Image 1 (cartoon, one colour):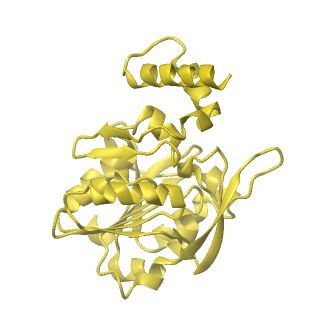
Image 2: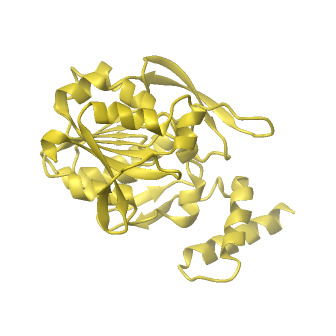
Image 3: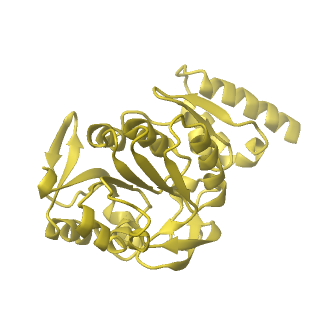
Length: 284
């Protein structure tokens, strides 16, 4: 009964957005995630952040539409700690533009942000959020980033959850939609991008491929990097956390992670997914 399902969907949204904890909250969340089609024609949700309003369409990333942005994450804290006024930054895996907008606010009118997002629905939402930025200092790029230039097939394994877009093909019994997108290396933009101070990389296991495609930029600019490091995800795309760590330490980077409120050195390959900040010796 579509009418009943839509009524249930509206009631659950109201409950989830109320900010009130209630028994069965995550069962309500799971029901909504299993019925994404019921929400496709709903209006965008405006989320009030500390620096800006952030607009989220229901289709590009429904999980964010339901629950909002998780605040005070390691990536956010690294960005706030290391991105300064006047800096030039890259947001690789920009998705809907939350970290793009955050960096835009931090670098100000004298800085610049380049945002890379290949999935069309997420890119369209990204453009809306970029247009609302007070500082007109963001250049969007509708491309994936890797270690070659050409075409790439990306898979969305959970409906249309663009934050989980990956180059890994679905396994047996998994369902996914695919998008063929343009892919570039960061080094192919060296003549267009001036000195880069900070880079965020979150590309669901393809982080090592991104680094391989920006070796010339790393040698030229020695930017600070924050990277989502997951050995399990990297392995699915043909590399490993150990390989990525070795690549960066060979180039003079010190790698740290957030332990509570402290940024501490990473002394071994983490068993679980962790966000790390990588600082070149010249800046430590």
